[in-house]
Image (cartoon, rainbow, N blue to C red; front, side, top):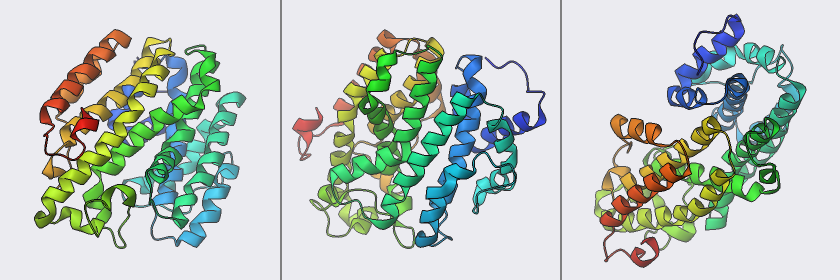
Length: 333
């Protein structure tokens, strides 16, 4: 819906940076009502700064904890920038005061929503700097930690503009399921990259992988493919339980653009589950949907009936891949 480049140089830079770090997210943002586009762009870049700090392994965990806890206190300070940065995020961090200037132009309510998000998110991010993911509830908490406060912040923005049912403010559990579904797909898909880190980043719960393997690092070894696939199908099946509450959330979104913003990532997550299910390529490389499939999903989601139709089609594709020999066959189907 944005038809031209912003005239303000800082705002234009924010959008150009967002395109560099997440082009696909830009396409979804541009489906939103125009009144939401700039706040969501700024929100994303503020969040990306916090994520970059969380993930910067060059900073010892004990030093990252106070930085994460204090992050929200600095997002309105134009002299400050996060003390981190690597890869594609170096420019964002170096020029971070430009994000701050745009943050300060937002209305006070939006500033407060984003500040509250960073305060809660920074605190929750510290939890898994100190503990491992051992159980399925641990995985729920980890997935919520990385996405839940963001989903709650966005819900407040929708309701504040009267684009969604105010009852959503009393249903943080639904926002949480939206967040956990997205977060778990990233954890599942990135398993090879995570176990090859030094030291390995173990986000799959031992409650699941311990049924099949003695050491999660064995999951990428060819001789353990049978066990690896059973483990993969198990954790994917667990993620499916978030779908029903996600659909409940989206039933309460009124605006078509906001609906699409919410629905497309969730639908793509389900499609990613289908692509990953019983797929040994998860352990040898990065499994992604083809661009044509992504575009088709993007165009198909305009309302709840269309969403249900797409969900059903993907579910049928996934069911066709299920094998009776899989330990979780009955639960999956």
